[in-house]
Image (tube, rainbow, N blue to C red; front, top):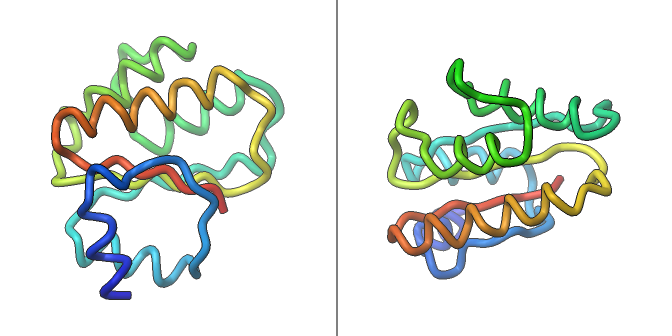
Length: 124
C-alpha cells in the first residue's frame, strides 16, 4: 500500500488505467496521500446523458455544469470547489463506448500534469 501511495503522488506517472489492486488498497492509499477520490458508478449508466449525470454527481459539479462533454472537461479542469494535492477518479462498471469520455479523461490528466498535480483515472 505504501508503494501505491508513493506512486499516486507522481504527476508524471498519472494516467488512465485499469485498477490492478483492491478497492480497499486504493481507498487507503488515496487517503494517505491526502487526495480527493471521486467514485463514479457507471455500471447502470446507459448512454452519454447518464454517464455525464453520474460524473457530475460524483465530482459534486457546480450549478453551471451543462451536462455535456465540454462542461465535464471544464469541471474536471477546475475543481476549485475541491482543492486537494491530487485527484483520483474511480469509474466502477463496464467502460462505456464513449470516445469523447476517453478524450476528456486523457486531456484532464494532461492538464493537471502540466500543473504539477496528479490526476489519476482508474476503471474497476
